[in-house]
Amino acid sequence: MKILVEEFQINLMEDGKNDNTVQSYVGDITAFLKYLAKMGVEFDGVLKRFYITSYKNYLIDNSYEPATINKKVNSIGAFNNFLIGKGYMADNVVDLKKDKIKIAFGSGEQVEVYSDSQLERIQFYIQNQKKVSLRDKMIIQLLMFTGVRVSELCDIKLKNIDFLLSQIKIVGKGGKVREVPAKV
Image (tube, rainbow, N blue to C red; front, side):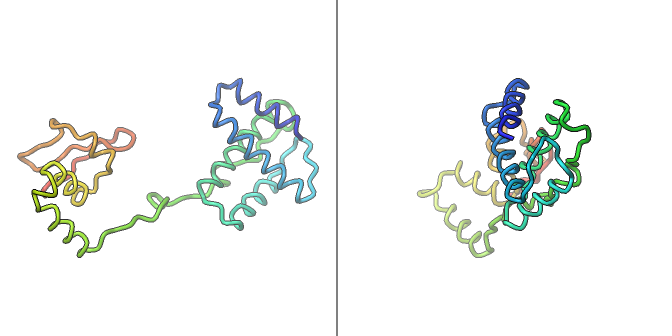
């Protein structure tokens, strides 16, 4: 078992994987194989579909985050491909579409939302020119009323602002461009 993990690690390094990625994959596989040993399985280089589903259920039952479970499933998938490449097994037993936990778009984290009274207090506070500069006031208002991310706000250029239409062209994640109304 230990020799297979070492061979897997060497294979990942030869594939040019980042050191952190290699350590993450090796750690995930080591934990997976320890789980199998705890369940009485003497791992001989052959994965079974049942092992994957059982381990995933174990992770879910132990309150692992969906992103962590998906990362571990990816690692096992890479290990499965390695075992096939080395001739230990013939079939791919990891199905990423089935084995990964689906995460609803935007549900990764709870978002804290200000109440109307909190927004009003902020509005009153930023009116005081002795405490808040015009620049900072504009930043706060853009964040409050346009829904742009902080990183998107930092990337706004003067050429992206259409003063006649009161719109800002925002370049978001993945280079996606959207128009945001900017009436503040």
